[in-house]
Image 1 (cartoon, helix red, strand yellow):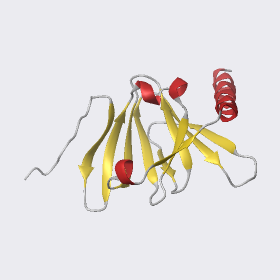
Image 2 (tube, rainbow, N blue to C red; image 1 turned 90 degrees about the vertical axis):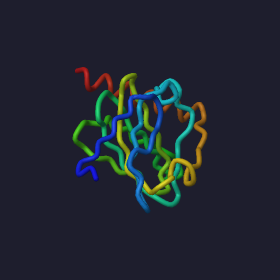
Image 3 (tube, helix red, strand yellow; image 1 turned 180 degrees about the horizontal axis):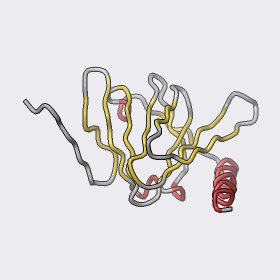
Length: 141
């Protein structure tokens, strides 16, 4: 029996690497589908939360606040060493730069059995892009 197990995934995409009875740890490596220019929808998990952590590269989490009549977006640049939780029933996306790698912790098979997509309208995409541009400008000043 290996007392210490390690997992390294370099292929692009999402891969569950440690799966147990009720949870899994996954690795999400950059693919073109996760570049900000490819953003066209948000994910929703109705039965579970999802936790993210940045391993390397640059990524942002985008969440849609639907508590008011007018939807708004929260955009958080991810930092290494910080865990980010997306509560269940939250519309969200992750956008990454090439070479980025994150890990996820979630209920087992979430990526297959508990995922719905909310298509973003052009007005919402414009709002997200403007917020990202503003944040990038503020970070560079």
